Structure formats: C-alpha cells, structure tokens
Image (cartoon, rainbow, N blue to C red; front, side):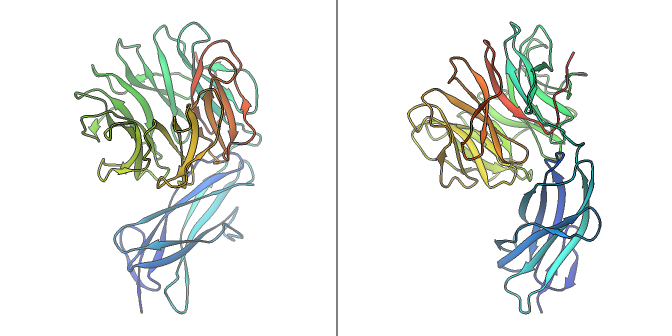
Length: 392
C-alpha cells in the first residue's frame, strides 16, 4: 500500500499517496474569495483536487475538480476562486485530494479552515496616482462609482500605491523624507511610516500575500535590483544581483514566486523567481518591451504591458509565459495592468481619452470602462478588496 504525506509538520499515515494542506484564504470580498492550498505526494504521478465549503461543517458546496502532475520533491500550490457567497458570513472549507494512480481510488479531505466575507454591498476600490491637485498624490475611487478621494495629502511626491492582501494598509513611494523611499500607511492614509529609509531610490512596492513582507525596486547597489523588507522595516534583503535592471516585482498569490521585469537579455523581459531570489526563469521572449507583470488571483495568468503590437498594449499570458494575448489593441498607450481580487477584471492606465486615465475591462479584454475622468494624469492603478477611505 502506498503511504500518505500530510501537511507540515510531516505526518505519515497509511492511505493514498497524495494529500492537501489548506493555506490561508485570500482576496476575500463580500461575495467571493480565493481558496489556497498545497498538495504533497510521496510518488510521481497525477492527483485530482477540489475544495468543499459551506456555512457550516456540512461542506455542501464544491469547486470543480482539477488534475495536476505531482512529484515527491516539493509541495504543489493550488488555488481556486469561488463566488456567489453570502456577505458577512463565516465559511468552512476543506481541500480534498485523491491519487489518480491508486486503486481503489480514495479521497483525503484535510483540515478545516474558516474565513469571513465582507459586509453586504461592499464595493472594492482602486488606488491610483494623480496630479489633479497640482502635486502627485495617492487617490482612491470605488469601483461601484463615485468621486475619487485623497489617501495622501503631502507637499512631497507620493506615487505607486500597493494594497496589503487584507487591504488594511497601503505601501507607496514618497519623497517626503527628501529621498524616494517606500512608506506604509493605514488604508485611509493615516499613520505613515518610512519602511526603507535609505539613500537609494526605492520604488514599486508589492505586498506579499501573507502581509509580512514588501518587495520593491531599489538602486542600493550599482543598478536597480529587487529587494524585500519586512512589513515593520526590518531585514532588508537583496533578491537579484545582476548588472542590468531588475525591478517591478509582483508576488504570486501563493507567495512562493516573484515575477519581475529585467533587461538582462538586452531588452526588457519578464522573469519569475522563487521568493528567496533563486531559480530565475524567463517567461517572455520578444524583441519588444515586456514589463509590468501582474499575477491573476488564481495564479494561472500574468497580465503585462508590451510593445510587441507596435504600441504599448496590455497582454495576458499563462503563468509559464505561454499563449500571450493582446487584451487592449488600441492605438493609444495601454499599460500598468492590475487584476481585480476576484480575477474577473483588469484595471489599467490608458491615454485613449487624450490624457492618462484609469480604465477597467473584463479579464478577456472586453467591456472597457473609464473609471476616472480628470484633466490631470491618472495612472498606476492598484486594486483593493475594500471601499475607498478618505485620507487626511
């Protein structure tokens, strides 16, 4: 009989050879969430998995069954977005895995996890950079409509917002210390704290899914590299070491990988590496500019900006770089894609109205809608799970 390798810490029991380890639920909104987990195996083969979930321990709802290849060498991260949930409700979920090589087949459902949806009618917000007030500030606007509000209001340059996974904090670039540093504030802009505080140019913050780290681009070495810092400002660590530009980091939803832009091959391409900076892998291979990666919540796709169509457009590709598709196909520039928490939409900045505005489109490029309408420059969108708060 094959033996089963369960979640960490490792426990061996007699059963099938594949089992699941549920991970924290992410991208929780009022009616949706992304369920995450790891699949472990003692042998090479295939495994099928699904999640059961419900408001109680009956687990009477189920996601589609997926099949993946597995080996005994590493955990295999899997995710599944669910929708149609009841607002303000606590849900129970289990990750269920079966070994396709085993006869008779058996299903192992492991470890109950809970998460709570947001209040009814809760909209999400998109933070963006705007100079509409005569100075570069972070603004936010509800995707359900309404006017934009200031998250920052400072005489110094503030730009490039990034929400924490639970949307309770915002990381951003600011010159308020006299140098470009990564700052962190509450979701309404209150209580700003300088996170990096060094003499280099720091920009392009990206929160880890578990909220413990912020990745960013820094010129602390001879050239721009990808760094990470703990959410309290400790343990600054350089992840890339290359003579070319490495920057624009984007975490995968499971926190195990970072996509980033690099020109180490002579032009800007998108790479992915492990979260500790090891094993960089090239995802795009085109003579035109490819950059600004943004991972979909289910980890299956990466949106990015590219000049491969002859002008700057937003593309989407598989997480392994396969099957790139032009989503915008517009004569003006379309850039800086940001996925919605439910994976159904992509925000981006575009000049199609004569100046840079924030648009939202379906994940397949359909139904583009203008979210901002201002004579200033609105760009660098970042999607939150919560409504916009008014800063000070």
